[in-house]
Length: 319
Length: 255
Image (cartoon, rainbow over all chains, first blue to last red; front, side, top):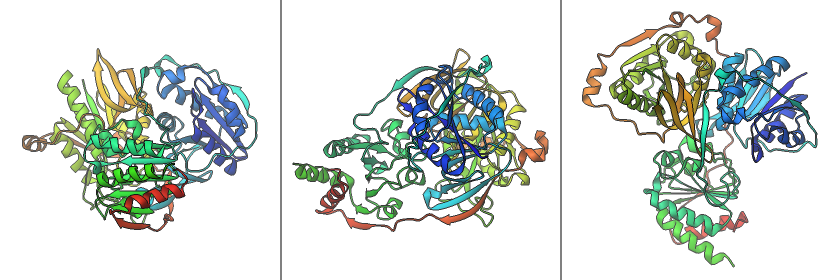
C-alpha cells in the first residue's frame, strides 16, 4: 500500500495554501495520504488538511518549531518517518520547508528533488528547466521516502470532503538542535492585495531605470484596483523594493488573470515565477527581450511613456 | 575566525546551459565562471575576516575547469582553495555533492560556513542545508546581512513578508542572498597574488567516502519541449498601445 505524506507548513493564518495543493496531488498517487504539521496552529489546521485528503495529521503545536529554524522540524520529521515509513514526502517550496527538506535528506539518506512542477508516481517527478522551456522527467531511486519539493500553484487544491484523525506528536527536541533562534520578526508589509492572490500583477525590472519610477507601477495598481506590484530579482537585489516583491524562482509564484511586465527582459529566474499567468502583457524597449516570447501582447517602447497613458485610459474607462 | 565558502563553477552563468546526450548539463569544454550568487558569500566572508581576523577558504566540487571559479574567489581575497575533482562525481545529485563538500569542510577547522542561496544553473537551494545537517551544525538561510557579535552568528534573514533576526551559536552555516553587500571586483594585485595561493586538489578517495556514498539517485529519463503558447502580437508603443492593454484588462474583467 503506497503511502504519501505531505509536510504541511502551518502559521497563524492556517495551513500554507500549497499544502492543500500537495494533498490533492497525493490522492492521485497513493491510497494512504497523511500530513505532518509542526508548530503553533498545527492541530487547528488538521480540519483543512483533512478536507483536502489527509486521512491522518501528525500534529504538534509546540512553539519550538516556530522559534528555532529547521533543526527541530527535521529532527521530529525524521523520527516520524522511521516509525511510519512513508514511500514519499512532498514539501511546498517555501523558505522554511526548503530548509527542512534539505536537512531531512541528510538524515534519511534518501533523495530530494527540488523545483518539481508535477509528481507522476512514487518514483518519478517532473520539473521545468531553462526558464520553463524544457520539461524533464526525473527518476528517483535509492531508499524511501523519496523527498520532493514542489513549486506552489503547480496544481489546483480540491477538497475531498474528508476528515483527518489527529495524531498528537510529543517529540523531545534535544538542546543541541535548538541553536538558530528567531530573535525578532519584522514585517515590511506592502499595501494592497497580496502578490499571490491579486488578479492583476504589475512587475517592474531594470528597464525602469530608477527606483523612483516604481511609483508609476503603484499608481497603475491603484487605478486598476485589484492589482499588486511585483519585481524581478535584479531590482530587489539592487535594493529598489523589499524582497517580498520578488516574483520568480527565489520569490513568489504568481498566476494572475493579467500579468504586466514593465521593463523586464525575462531572465529564466523570473519567467518560472510568472509564466502560468493567464494573460501576459510586456512593455520593453528591446524588441529581442525574451519576455516577448511569452507575451500575449508585447509593446516595444518606453515604459515610462506607456504606463502613464495606460493609467489615463483606465481612469477614463471607469464609470 | 575561519570561514569556509562553498563555491560552484557554473557553465554560462548569464546564458542558457545545454543538456548533453546523456541528459546531464554540459560542464566540460564550456566557458564558465564562479556562480554570481556565490560572489556575495565570498564578499561576506572577506568582510567578516577583515573585522575579526582569520582566514577564508573556498571549497568546490567540479571538473578541472572549476579551478576558474576558485581563482576568481582567490583574486577577490580568499586565502586558499580546495577542489574535489573526480570522474565518479559526474552527474552527482545534491545529496552526493553535499556529502563530498561536508567531508571536505570537516578536514579543517571552521567557525562559519557560507554559501549562496542557490546555484544559478541547478537552483535547487537545498544543498547548504544538507551540508549543515551532515556537519551537525545550525544554519540560517536567506541572509541579507551576516555578522558575528560576541562570538555568535547574527543574521537578517529575508522572509516572505519582511525579515527575521536569527541568532545562533558557532560553528554554523548561513546562505547569503544577492541583497547582501555587493561583491568587490578583484584588483590587479589580487589577481597576481591569487596565482601564489594554495589550492588543494582532492579525489573522492581522499575524503573517506565509499562508492555508494557518491552514487546519484536521480536520473533524467525523458526530456521534452514544454508546451508553449505561441508568441502573441508585438506592437510599437504608439497612441493605441495603452488602449490595447486596457482592452486585455477589460477582457479579463479586472477593470
